[in-house]
Length: 95
Image (tube, rainbow, N blue to C red):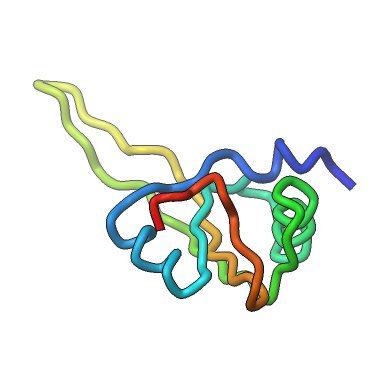
C-alpha cells in the first residue's frame, strides 16, 4: 500500500464542507490515481477513525484567463468520507 499522506493531499474547508461535517462527512482533496478503498484506508490510518463510506468527485479543469494568455486549471479529485457514528476528526474542530 502507498503512503497514506500521498493519497490524502489536504482537507477542503469551505462553507459547504463544514456543513457536511455536522453530518459526520468530511471532504478531502485526494490523489487523482487513488480509488475509494485506498482513500478509506488512508483516512482510517491518518486520523484513527472508522470509515463508513467514500464518495469520489472528479473535478474537470476550468477555463481561466489572465490578460491575453489563457489556459485551464488542473484536474482535481475530491473525496467525501462518511465516518461511523461516534467517530470524529478533530482536525476540523469548528463543528
